[in-house]
Amino acid sequence: MRNFIAFLLLVPLIVSCKKETDNIIWQRSFGSGNALFIKATSDSGFVGCGELNSKPYLVKLSREKSTLFDFTSEKDGLFSSGWSDDSCFIAAGSSNNNMLLTRINNNGNQVWDTTISGSFKISVTNLCYTGGGKFLAVGSSIPDTDDSKAVALMFIWFDTTGQIIKNDSITGTDIISASQVIVDNSGNIYLALTRKNKGFKASASVAKYNSNLEELWEEKIYNNTDYTAICNDIILTGSDSLYATGMIEAYRTSGTLDNSFMASLSTSGKLGWKKYFENSNSGSALISNDSDVLFMLNRNCFIISKLDPYSGTVMGPIRMFNECNSYNTDAFGTDIDIFYDRNILVAGSTGGNFYLAIKPSL
Image (cartoon, rainbow, N blue to C red):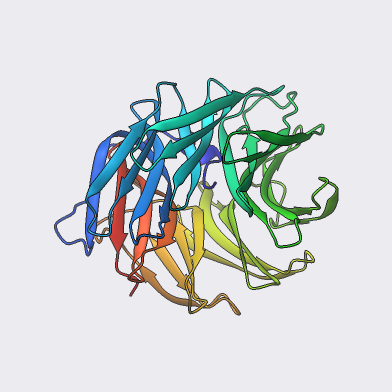
């Protein structure tokens, strides 16, 4: 799950993007809220989830983009990630500072839900399918300004019936948040991390743990501890290629400027290339298509960077809103996926509304 660190707390600006010249295949706003997750489904449709009117919300759409059903939880909170197959949907998020796990059937009805509390506030939950009807959910807080408060990560293994198989946590003396989790075929766990040590700026890294939560390595992907760096997403492609994205502050005479970045790593933790892209922006999500082309979603204005995975060379930016200004916008992208027709699914918010869209991949 993706894309949730401090930028989710920013107050949207009031200037809206002009839509009359936008090259968008399809778009829809669903009401006040924020779409945090989008995923193509096996029936050539797609599902989105997030927060609508302060409630966890999920909507399933068909190949033709019509709404098949939607689901609103009775609880306060949000859904930050999900998974689906032909029989059900599993959504994960948070409610009243607890982890929220929910199963929804194909009619849009809740089968079960459960909330799990920890020793710290859980703001979002990232979900990973591990095979055989089992999942790993990682609950995380969002770093705040209280340097004296240590924050852990909660790990919950469970199945489609809602049975908790195992629970564990990672604790420490610094504030830690995880914005994405990946599990490989050997059971190793990769995390997109943001740490905040007392007296220092937030720092971005990628870490690898084994199935017993023993750390194998952690690689820093920031340059200077005087500037904030946040890791928002990671993906694993092939057997030995990791890619991470997020935000790194850069110096300028009037203060600092946010830059989106992307980095390549091996599964042994060796840092390859690192590139910087959009000014006044943050890399919020990554996806790779079946031709191994990488797409990085920049948060402000939904700008998509199309990249060569071997060198990080930009093959072309893909703009959603031609008149959008990243320095002053209310259009914020949080997640990305590839639709059945190879076009790009995006989720986020525009004008403070839960927003889903489809954009050409060219």
